[in-house]
Image (tube, rainbow, N blue to C red; front, side, top):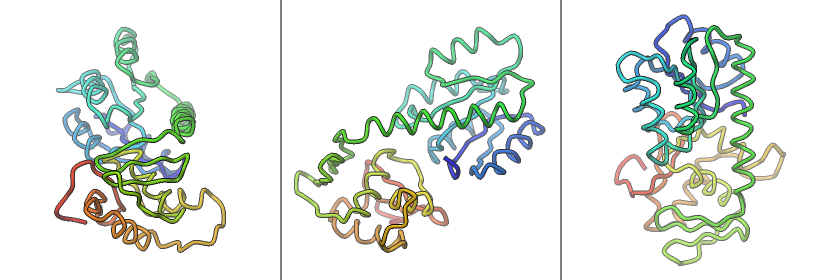
Amino acid sequence: MTGSTILVIEDASDIVELLRYNLERERYRVLVESTGEEGLRTARSQMPDLILLDLGLPGLGGLEVCRRLKSNPPADAIPIIMITARGEESDVILGLEMGADDYISKPFRIREVIARVRAVLRRVLEKQASQRGVAFQVGPIHIDPARYEVRVNKVPVELTLAEFRLLETLAERPGRVFSRDQLLDRITEGRAVIIDRNVDVHIRSIRKKLGDARSLISTVRGIGYKLVETPLHSGI
């Protein structure tokens, strides 16, 4: 779970720095926005693994940010931990009903925040693991994890195991940016297997095999790759 991307949407600079420092110590990648509008844009463009969302934001409030994220896929899959002030119990209930995963009350202990973050990320991984094996489709690409089969417009595509795991990872979270290190971890699953550890080489091979669907895999310069549902004509 280390290496996961966490978006902090909070306008109090002291709380932001406390969260950023401690989350980065735990080897999370931290993104920060101070307004609801900016938080929404970053959440939709970066597709973080988790959001820490202050409900008391100026302008577009945290509850509205939560509602908009949870009502529009694929961002609705991003887990949200609400950060609340005392006296916001009714807002907490509304947020949980909208789909938020947990909440933390101010003032908080940083160890509690780290524990809650780990717990929510662990639940997400467990849910993904339980769903793995179920066939799914993104655009023209059909993936059957149980059979290690890929079809593009119903035509079979032969992939190596490493290539299959890479494509499956990207397709499970369309629009989410994965770093090369995260993709490499998925290929190896923490084991020392004999593969080409250059993710770019595997991505080039996958694109070649996908044919006309190759433009669904987009390069995010300086970070890694993402898979989109609509073909792109640049940045590939």
